[in-house]
Amino acid sequence: MATAAANKAAKEAEKQAAGEDVSPEAAELAVRVKELLARPVTDSALMALFTPSVPDAEQQQQIKMITRACSACAQVIRDNSNNCADRAAAIRHVREAKMTAVACVMHHGRI
Image (cartoon, rainbow, N blue to C red):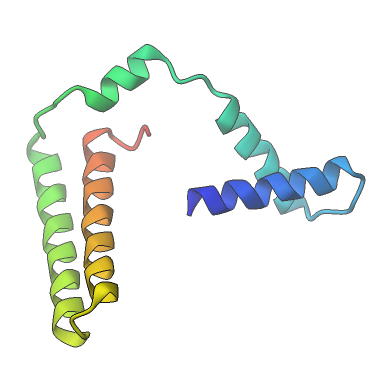
């Protein structure tokens, strides 16, 4: 999803650079994406991504709620769709969403 937004912003930036009219929202998005892509990835930022940490009580509760919701979603998919590659992919995406959400909790949304 982020890649699609970045691609759209890049296209809007190209239009703007070519002198074409773009919406103010698209122009603002293009500027924000350029700024994000220009930020350097520091050693400390990388270390923070890969340094293990123990969740505090609030984070444990948040992770528990995320896990329950994702588990329920995966069960609904399993129980209401045919056993095929698409079902496996859907469940895999729920699992990926859970892992990403937990990372957001553990990194306090800094990433």
